[in-house]
Length: 290
Ligand SMILES: [Ca+2]
Ligand SMILES: [Ca+2]
Image (cartoon, rainbow, N blue to C red):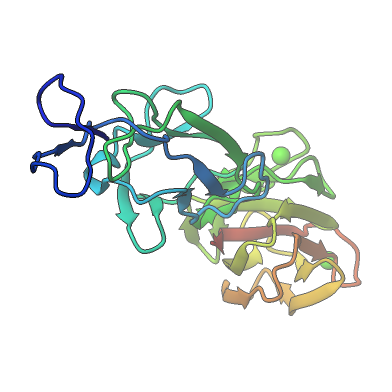
């Protein structure tokens, strides 16, 4: 701000002197630039929830119209396409927030940028953030947010009694990929796991999952099978089917997952009578996660 009477004459202002009119001139864009005093998530944060919002707190009251999807962006590292999001500014807390339209992807590093300089965000006096504020964070690993077929996820580990566990087909024989459509009492399933006792498949939940669902049973390719299906979270047994046989209809299960465990184990045992014909289907198996 500067003061002037519009002329070049120096005025000595003393009692009784003639009135002189001074004009205060505010120059937009001058003054101390605002800064960002904090971010959420913090720079370098890991294990960030997929439903997070991204926030920047300013040192000064900002001009809300300068904070928008152009000046506050979230971009997956290595991409040039910002995440679709709503951007808002709360003058009470001097906080700008990016709210993504859909949950973030797991195990992904994101780059958050608040633009500075002439085309950047500006405070209430029109003073811009001096330079771009850029920080990164990484989301949790584990399944995506929502409901996923486990056969579309990567397992952490897998053991199986007859070749590998198959995805979206019955166990078949010892080779990978030699199964048939999953079939329990002649009801076919396009998704699921085809296992064989004794089998354990372990999934990483990253503490973010709340339910496991499936239809379980002995596959029609081995009707003499006898199997027990179990679901464990670490050392905690969440579900036990009892003995299912090749004559048992598929059993629809909905297993709540509580306590935010890190891992889930899908276990098949031979029901205590040997593993011959124990072809076990986790048909339509799904995890629901945050
Ligand atoms: Ca096979
Ligand atoms: Ca058996």
